[in-house]
Image (cartoon, rainbow, N blue to C red):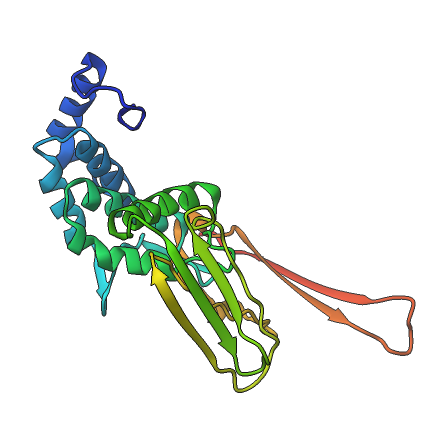
Length: 254
């Protein structure tokens, strides 16, 4: 309701905030809930908002110049991306830092969120994509120049002519892409001239043969699949009219 410009003095909102403030140290056990509570308290300019954000930051993990949160991990997943809940936690945490004017503390979160995007600029689900992009766009508006007029030149070692992207006020929120042919080694150079703020992202997409479950990355139990299914296609070159499938499945639950 606060996002839709309801006043924090409205009676229902005041009661809800009072409940959250009173129960902050009792009911908030997981990171996702704490991130939501912190964001709500920050929007309402609650006196408890700063303490809630400090508590959330204490649960974060650091990796170099990156800050992020992880859910209890007991499952396996073939995806390299963090689970949706972890993306949402980082998004709400970043928004809370902005609202509380703690911008420098939010930069490591922004960098982590930027690194988790897929090749289309989004994340695992619609919900986490909305939250994360809202946080990143808010950061962009706070740090970007009031005028955007820039040329971004991208050149690959396998290309004869460079590609120039013209970014201005009209198209600054439009995704611009360039696909390079597969080659080894690959050398890509990028340069920018003008004024404005832009994010450059390089994605390498490839297939892996025989990706076994034992090699898969651990991820949140919330996104753990109940069953594992391995499909092997046996192509008999002597019989062009049929294929043999070996399908092995197992239950992954406890």
